[in-house]
Length: 113
Length: 107
Image (cartoon, rainbow over all chains, first blue to last red):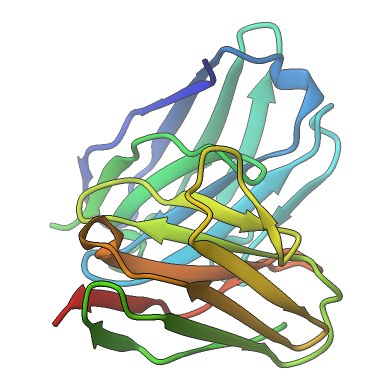
């Protein structure tokens, strides 16, 4: 069974950094594009970033360009999202997903002083 | 960026009713669209891909149609377990964009 489990969400101060991880199981990670999607409290879904199978092609939503980095380790079956210079508006549940299904259960990132 | 305009934002219908949700793209996206269901406090689950293909395991009362700029998700006979928020997602070009969501509940 395909399974994705995110971790690393936390309360962080504005301007801080955080690294999210997503552990994949039940499929061969290096066969698939992967993505991160977020959902602010009480709001809709927002695509954040995508990464190609070999990690050499990445895409980001404008609001995170230059601050967030998506990466992967196919040997460890893991996907990552390095988030720097965090802002209050980055507060959200972050989901990792195998493009385009299934999704993990999400991890909460709260940016607040 | 491609804007996805989803309507209505919410609806209330009776069990057994036919329910239709629409997404309009600001430019043509061929059939590169999926529909997702999100129940409270849960991760979204894909129902439909490539605009009209039913995801394995999804009940046949769900269907999708459309191509280009106009797309529809139909629930042929609304069931209590269908109470959720529904989203469309275009993946024709980056940045990928979701519709604003449609909250469906039972009258």
